[in-house]
Length: 210
Image (cartoon, rainbow, N blue to C red; front, side, top):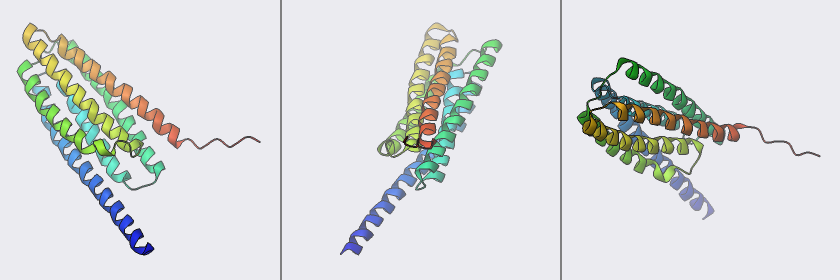
């Protein structure tokens, strides 16, 4: 009787792990495809906001790959995965800032209609990814980091659509530049928060004083 119960529990855990793995793989593919599409359109349309969004897609794809590697491993391994993901996000946030400075210096003018259209497609893709990961966001720091990145994507997409509407209305590139800068700051802020959480989990517990 006990053996059967243990077997059922093991089977349930295996099914849960399998469902989580499938969700991670599906979200990884969505982000990888959208990174290529959004970066291509962002470069062609000279949109800092779209380029920032595309980099966030890349961050998510890399993070999801790390999450797959860390799946079903120790809490320490998962904390390290979250730490790695956050460190990559912080570095790419700096890259977005550098690209934004280049756009401003070059005086590039974004194509608003492509900002709005691509932003809408990316928003739908990120809402799907967020839905896939939502049920696992409280499992550990690695899954929390992945869900937060996906949530940031959706916020960035909405901001890109708004910036595209403003560029179209006023014929000025400033809304695109502002959104690009805000998205980079959002990435950096989230990455620093996850780095702190992951580092706290990796720190050895303090020995009790006599």
